[in-house]
Length: 278
Ligand code: HH2
Image (spheres, rainbow, N blue to C red):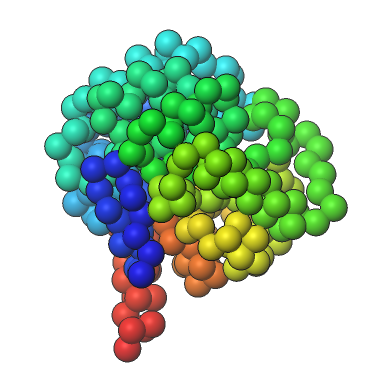
């Protein structure tokens, strides 16, 4: 049985978990602006928990390709008041940030998981997290959001992403962060072409082996790659592909799926689980 040590919580990863996305950004690619007001955000968080979200992931910076830069102060203004108000939500609170300063301000309020698309590359982030009990999701990306989709380039994307994540895991362990607190994520759409993304999805089992069996989190929900496969420009119209992608990821070993559509994903995973244990 794999147990994730996640701040105030211990998460049993023997069944796949759903992480619901709560964006506090006016410009996120799929639902930007919809939950920007704090009252709407609180309501949306509670709705997602009622629909079966096991974790809520709060983000104050959009990392979609070409997203404008947000200052750490702006990011804090967006996420800290929400974190304070969500302390009694009953499920782990994840913070989607790549900045040490934002992590440092949020940890004392109460964050159970740091979801970092930069895999703790910001200076001092690793040492800061070593002194906390939060779980950490280490994600791979090639380049930075403003330029990452210009010319993604790999010799073998599965090998390279696996090697990078294995290095980040080793650095975390050397820095005093226990394996039981770590998750890895290939970072779908972060400096990857459609072909790279599809190869990574197919190669998830290999990736998990390369990173020493650290549990996998994946984020495919509503992403551009799904739009490309289905010829659908509107992100919120990609529900079918998003659910199928989550299921495909779980079938290939993902432990946690990061999604916008909690209820539909939960239902698909419940069915998968029922068939598996029949
Ligand atoms: N994707 C986005 C943001 N954070 N975190 C992890 N661990 N994995 C992902 O694939 C991932 C992530 C996408 O960025 P954003 O533009 O913020 O859109 P949204 O939050 O609506 O998915």
